[in-house]
Length: 298
Image (cartoon, rainbow, N blue to C red):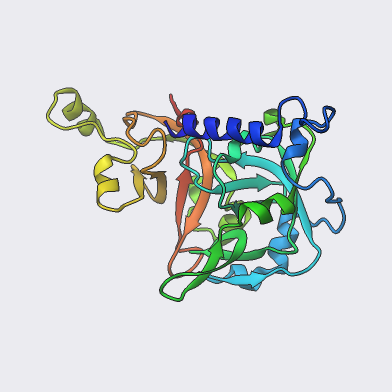
């Protein structure tokens, strides 16, 4: 239902802005011209790794936050978006040197930022920081309790701050295989946090659970039950058998939240984020599926 709503909103946006084959005043204008800031130029571009190195002290904090405030840009290809509601108000990009999450307070990002779309991002009015050691780009935000963190970029500022580069090419996006032996390796975490990765041959629920479900003695375990949402729990972790500190994290608002978790050996692809309270190396890995198809039964 959420996906249908996003599509309807995207279509309405097209009607209002004239994004058919062009717009009403300029028939030659392309659909891509209706999104982003085409005036941006590829000057002062740094890699995502270079950006993280510049703000290393900020990113070493559990809840770091620093205004960039200078003419810097990054570019990268979209790894994940909000197409099935599990990655909410975020777009994730990777340039080959690393990945970073951009927090955007706009729905329907998948309509113009599909997987494989390359974008240029102007950082001059943005902030960089962490949430539980997870690097993000966004704006300054103060919670009702007075805590500061990375907030969501407004629609207007976001539209000024990015530019579409060429046509999307999903074939350029390949997941990196997750090394299960480096779950607590701080350097490995820092290098790969936010990237699209695949963890292979893992199991999320026991054979006993599967048997009880089939016999009707126990309801099937789903990614994020409605009961979780009713208890004000907006995201749910599913543990991996035999591997601590790594979880599949699902929003109760995801389109597949009530889908039954498959039993048996699985390959799971997703955006690998971290969340920690003490240090980076003590953080949990949290895998965010982009779509239900990111889980493949062996």
